[in-house]
Length: 204
Image (cartoon, rainbow, N blue to C red; front, top):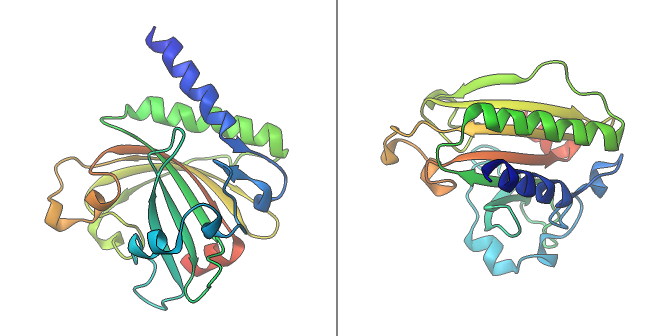
């Protein structure tokens, strides 16, 4: 029964994403890079939920943590500061789970990566990346503490990318020591992220 339930969730997950060979056509719950976030959320919602994770330096982008729909627990929507149209430059969909089994989550990466590769006719990177979100990484990621990440990426010719990742959070991290309670309350997540070339270069 458990395996049958997981299969239903996995099939639903694939149905929430529309694939093409152009990242501007790739949809997560009907949202995509190049859309106006105002088509899905109102302006006050976006501004009230801005997190500022990418604003510590050049103040080029804002990121709003928005409630999820469908199978997603939340969305992180990023757009340029001062853009009255709130054009989406990066979009993350997160599926939360308490005590996500790492092997199960990584298997989801593999399964979904094959789906993307078949639909986009793109090769899969040969090796997944594994790293920890340590305190020294707090300027680059919205988490601190000894949490583990496994990721796999697809790179487009124009520099845009898709990232599939598992975040297995350190459950013993103190709330005052990290920002992780702002987004996932120490829950583990499987994530699908799409980044425009401009946003990817900004993060670099």
